[in-house]
Image (cartoon, rainbow, N blue to C red; front, side, top):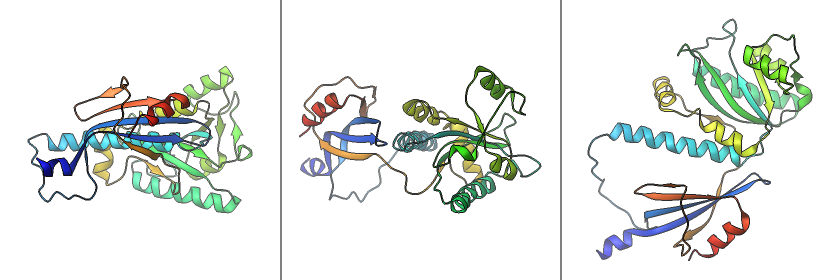
Amino acid sequence: MGRQQSLYLSNQTIVTEFSDGVHKKWKFCTMVAVRNAGFEINRKPFVRGGVNDKKTDNNISRTRSTIFELAFCNAWEWFFTATLSPEKYDRENLGKFHKDLTQWLRDYGKKYDIKIDFLLVPELHADGKSWHMHGLLKGLPIHHLKQFKIGDKMGLKLAEKVKKGDCVYNWVSYLQKFGFCDLEPVRSHEAVSKYMTKYISKSLDNSVRELGSHMYYCSRGLNRAKQIKKGIMSANITPDFENEYCSIKWIDNPAIAQALISSIL
């Protein structure tokens, strides 16, 4: 029993701060048991049944968490939808699309002496074979873009937005290289961060695994969340999420967050 108490710490609350420099929120994750640093377990745990499904679910959950973290912790400017023209590219080749697009973004930045950061998530078209991407960009100057106007060639959904007076932009350089795209200014930082996670699904995980690819792509050096405290919290809070392993509470109010952090020993 003494060894087990050494191997694990119980009821540990880990506080992580999410911030892009302007917006802030805190994640309080209380774990039923956490591995104690400095101890190793030589034997592998035995798990009965459902291993592949559990791995898939865990992978999707981790990816959604990472997408939200990267989205929230960086000051994105544009929501970007990028498609491929069948006259320019094989729309079924996600690997080439990812490789060429990310390299093109880097080259474009060098050409104009700017740094374009990106967070991109692939998605299949309705045909189940052709790929396009949704993502977030920062560092792309607005004067590199052309605002869509009534009468321009565009899809029905986009045309409805333009008719309502929404500001939607075309990136002609991308259009000439890859195909149709549109960009909209990020209006709600947290809303777009949550929205990005909706593209992460079991079907996407299965599709990219078959291609040996990934569920998201991002530029180097993006800001990440920071763990700021760990210990036993004396305050009682109602979690936003709870299962047999952990409970999670998100706090937006700085004063409340600091009070809860102070209660952790």
